[in-house]
Image (cartoon, rainbow, N blue to C red; front, side):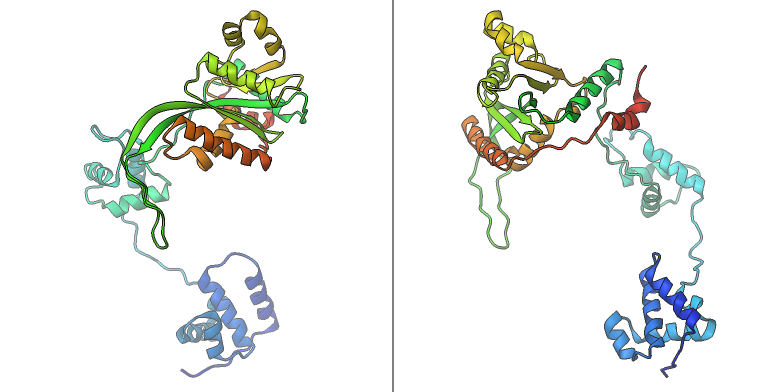
Length: 367
């Protein structure tokens, strides 16, 4: 192919530079812009091929398009007619409505195969293929075989009152004499390996047998001070009132022995109330303990407001989310995890405010 030299005008150079520096263009258009700029500077074709990674034919066609119809024609892709639409918009809407309907009897959820079978029974969709339905669902961002868990209770006046109280509590500056501590518990199943695990080696991952032996359950109490970067964890056999009271008393007599008031954030479990202290310790012994505690409760179905849930999630991801055979082993492991987290002073920065709640949940409010 004979190389034809091209030379852009000053106006065309400005247009080309603006095109290369601004806007979003596809790869072909970007390549053509770089090719035209290089040709205008008399860069050899071989060097253009090596730098841009394009073929000689692409350079020749770009040069020819500019010679024939100018800069705009050489830069832009010509519109393509494409294949005609096989199914009308109404047909695609019918498939989408079908995918949003309950799955047929005997099926847990819709699959592409089930959708094809159901759609082919509809008028005008007798010959629809699995690929056509897949494209229709993709266009409408539909995945009927998936679902997300969602749990938000009725946002009544009581719900809002408790939510606002907690959000305002989290906004207060840190006071070491009145720390905010979020507490929750997690049940953990004890699982023993039935066979020794095969360790990892270069080119091979570690392997463990799919079978395991159940060894009962235990409970993990987690208390985290978000602004102080401190957490306390206790592993118990159960989570009765006695266990709960012992854990809280341990906090007050231990790491928080010198605090004036402990702001304790919890959910509404039946053990998480002042009456538990009276029943376990007696009224006289419980009185000085309760004087130092101010209880704050999350609304029902609002565990997301308790920052202990975040800490438990991190603990499960980093430490307890594996097979652990005994309560003693779990206690040893979570103690090591707790000490490492405390030494690094990991804090929780809460950003959700009352204004955010009104903006995101306002349309659910019940007056």
